[in-house]
Length: 398
Image (cartoon, rainbow, N blue to C red; front, top):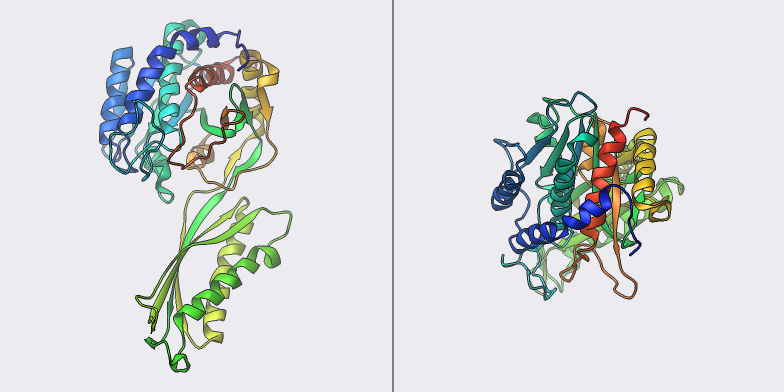
């Protein structure tokens, strides 16, 4: 990992023992989306130890700390997500999860510890802050539909004082350790989900002519949906339609009365999002009718596309290039088709969502894996990144 000689990096290094301890404590006690009560208690305790005032909320487990409340400059919110995933950990770490079937397999423990580290270094240099900095610890990012960002916004987390800019980051195994990735424009996808129920005629598998066969109809729907992206959406527009689960039947010689398909739809532009929903609904009904069956579809919209605005992102990048070195701040042109409810914040105020490198040569890693364990050195870069981004956005020359 490259040397980091600028303003916040030495302070972040000095904070590494504390960040390591916070990360370990949070990693040992992961909680699923909308269940983060213990995590909230831990975060509140850590902020109290740092002397940072904070507030909690009636709905959800969010915690928002506040630095520089007496400053009159731009208000910057720094966000970390809190929830774990339903996986049994296989990392072998000394601080591995103590919660059966739950682990921090997406780096949210790193995000929280890095935000606490940023709070530490900013609190030690209050003269650098021109305005308040909100420390937003957000639950339920992995929820996928309502999420945790929207309830926080609805409860006034970005009010009093009103937030002018927001910055977040996420560990990224495809960005090398020691580097931070950035992008402008659509950077992560809108994520919608569907549940299709195919209603057929149940009976003995030896007499399929009594049909319609719900299994066959479901199979035709799965195949038919694969042509939506390739034959309806402009090839220049990234889009995904995937069926992730099929439920139906009890025995090899019994045709079920119904089969259920669960899937996801991803897009980057609102027009494409609307087109995909219309087309999926129409195609499902058309295929079912053509085979004499009936199908119902429940289609639910989740997080919107995450769009990084140009001006705020460029301001942050200039600050990070000074902090980390230009060679360690890398532009990424290819969007991810994963989703993030950080997009909700960017619909309200400008800012940017960054990719914190945790990639190590020869050690392939994947998010949402039972073996995912980012290198703790990323904590230094993560804390320095958030601190530098906040100060850059508050700079009078921006």
